[in-house]
Length: 447
Image 1 (cartoon, rainbow, N blue to C red):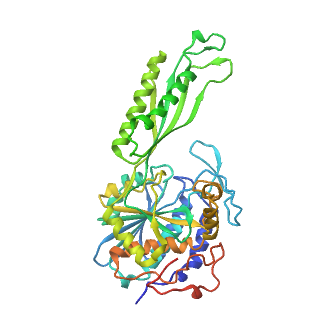
Image 2 (cartoon, rainbow, N blue to C red; image 1 turned 90 degrees about the vertical axis):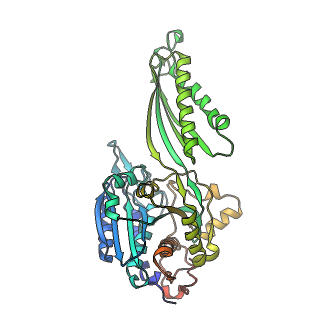
Image 3 (cartoon, rainbow, N blue to C red; image 1 turned 180 degrees about the horizontal axis):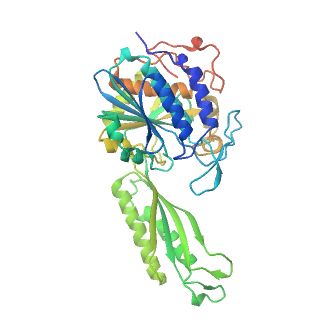
């Protein structure tokens, strides 16, 4: 059977590009060099390229005759984290954040993997145009970590740039064994709402509490009462997480201040539950302020809001079937994730179904040893950790192949990327010295 160009034809530049991206991360809305690199590569592949979409977003469109239109998305931004992986290509970058504070920067969430994989898939698809028909749209999105990058691309006219789209697809590298592909229908990532609440009291000397309305006590009562929302107001069958992550009040041990600021985070998977908990938070805070005799009503500020990611069942079934045909036992079920993402803002705005899956990024032997010892949570760094470092291979091979296989489920016949490295083969940061030795038939592209 004919195949699209082998993965070993892109490994050299793709691995080099990945290391460059990892070593030179950029914060949300600052992805200027990354975006320029992406645009240059897409043009070299023959794509029509649109830059500056939603700030630093890049869109590449490849029209190849009549047929469906498939959108593939990768996010580009890094995190304000100091890298501690010890890699030879570890980031030592620092930059100034939006508040003017100097901060280290690291690709601690694997968005560099996403960019490298989508560019690899874009290249393979461009080189095999005789084997598929339709339109491929490659979206490189800024500011996923801020939760507004997808929305800003939509508001900046994304729909006009991409035209009619039939399906949207995306993936994320996760802390399980590299070579593994995991998906699920229905809810997959939670919605997230961060909220800043300011409650007001009356200041006084610490020796005269009777003259004060103590905002610290008020804040403490709110925190305790909020613990009952999930445990007593949300049905046990509905997942929800409510966390108070920050409290700030007062300036000195013997001074009762006049206000307190609480910051909390909510994770839900159902819109009705989301609204129920938000209403409960408001009700409890207002009631506790009234009970304490607050001189002013509380103030609520919502920020960093992420939509829920809910995979379309039919779309997921199509992609899962394509994955199982191509990768066999490497495909597994993905557990419900409490993390959040703004990818769904794109297909929701375009009115198209979508599915989102995970690919593993951890050295298979390391992961297997941790799993056998019951120490996965202790020994395997997660996304956002300063130690998070996906192995270059087979992570890139797998992530590139999944994008191609998923896109071809709509655009192609039975073409699949060949030359994928089998699971466990050279799961290190050293490129294969003899790629041809790891080639496998196009009907068995198990990475």
